[in-house]
Image (tube, rainbow, N blue to C red; front, side, top):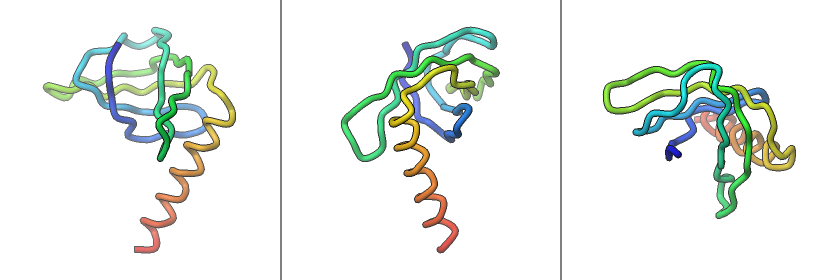
Length: 89
């Protein structure tokens, strides 16, 4: 399994960058997503929609098939707060 950094996250999916190749489009993958500001991880299942090779890294777009609703809300709330803070500066 690949270790990556989430670039963006929405209700329906996410994009992450990793140094390791992940399965390609139409493959189903298991994800472990670290919750912001916590040492907890949420499990999710996603459908790889696209993958782009960026030299020594890979950018991957995933449509979420299933994920714990509470965990998703925690991540979306954090992303929204970060966006609001960025817009204020």
